[in-house]
Length: 353
Ligand SMILES: Nc1ncnc2c1ncn2[C@@H]1O[C@H](COP(=O)(O)OP(=O)(O)O)[C@@H](O)[C@H]1O
Ligand SMILES: [Mg+2]
Image (cartoon, protein in one colour):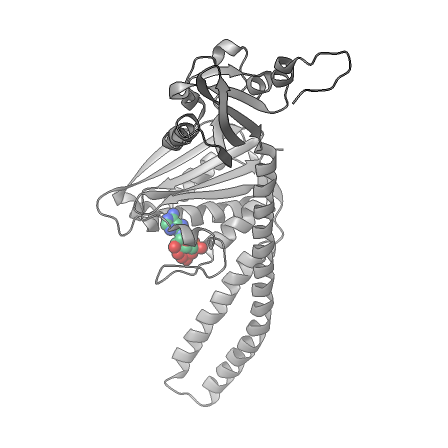
């Protein structure tokens, strides 16, 4: 089609060169033969030499290289179009970004090449992830509110029953009364625990600077008698950085994380390993607790943090609820990665004010 521009000729090369989308022309074996300005910007590269004649795989994570090759063949050999799809790319500085990519054949003389069009969707993906996270938090918060409501409703009558039981015990002793009382105590304690995690601010605690590295070491000390079959690896950086928050809540949260890590290795053969990392990056303190325990199946990951979700015979399912609520209350974030049979990493990010 001829472009009608009056007396001006359109420079199509300029059009491609300054296109807002990143455009590559790729040849045999994934060799990059052309890339426009947007592409250099996208990948944070200084000059075309940083990319020209390199193979496109250099800019994609290794786990998708086979897929890239297959799609490139689809274009070059079958002369077919590759539908738009979401992928990850690696920039010149090592940052991994989310992109959307499509490719189609491009004919130059007697050669078949591939035109690859890439769009940065990192911001959109980040917003999507934030929305999912927010929904999860709202869900957790509302479950917490329901739990707190139930606790109040059930605790009062139980306390009354306990009071009358004590009166009855004094006037008409019976051998079953002690058992009944002990069971009632257990129920009341369970309710009290639930109240603590669903309403962690029950006891107003001041915000104080907390030296998490020091605290982590002393929390781990509490598990001393369990650690004979666990190797501990410390990777602590930026130890001078402090988070500001409610100290007791943090102590409980990291106690709960470490307890789970140790329990995750109860059933594995041989010695397990816990790695504790601490570092500062982009205004946040990062703490990672990794174990080489049983791992968590993918379908269970989204249940983590929900009150009473537990796979342990003696578990309460309240540990992670306390962890998640505490981290979120301090404006932080927690994510988990797990491979069944290999282990689990909890990654906590806390803002430093
Ligand atoms: N490090 C971990 N490795 C494997 N599974 C874990 C780990 N941390 C938590 N989980 C899973 O999450 C569930 C909930 O944990 P939590 O809320 O602490 O309750 P509990 O420890 O009482 O079961 C656990 O029962 C377990 O299935
Ligand atoms: Mg636990």
